[in-house]
Image (tube, rainbow, N blue to C red; front, side, top):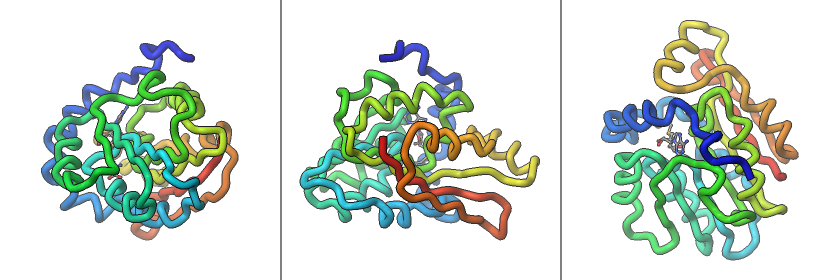
Length: 209
Ligand SMILES: C[S@@+](CC[C@H](N)C(=O)[O-])C[C@H]1O[C@@H](n2cnc3c(N)ncnc32)[C@H](O)[C@@H]1O
């Protein structure tokens, strides 16, 4: 296992600060540009009964609410480093007996080895910074051998000004993620789509270890 200290990215304090201010506006604004989230859940293959599911960077809990509907017998864990985002998720999901929320950054010792049938990353990987290789090793350790990883995220943009603007908002827009996902996982399903007539592209990826 990697030294957990080596998987720190320099972005985490900035991301935490960013969401201190954005959490109250998050649900009212993000529907207009975080595309493909509900479609990704439709692409997930059947899981074993009582699956263990993890969402890394679960934010305000939009996906977990949908996961609960898709997999009514699942145990779902949501991890996020932002207390404000997690507080919103807690308000949204306080009815649920299936869902557990954990505060913290994702790292090598966050969970036991081979714990999950499904790990979901929805618009969180692009916030992990450019050096994501250690994260992929942790994902492989945390997934069961027959588990699935499901990712939806920004891909890239042909416009330098837009990439710079997203970087300013802590989003790495360099198109680095799909090649890395294909390197670490066997793809089961991949789509790449345009947003706003090609201002940027985003991708959906389902893979297995
Ligand atoms: C754009 S939001 C996405 C939230 C949710 N997944 C969604 O689709 O609406 C990114 C989330 O990832 C969290 N995040 C970023 N880096 C993280 C890390 N290293 N560990 C845990 N959470 C992280 C942020 O705090 C934020 O809540």
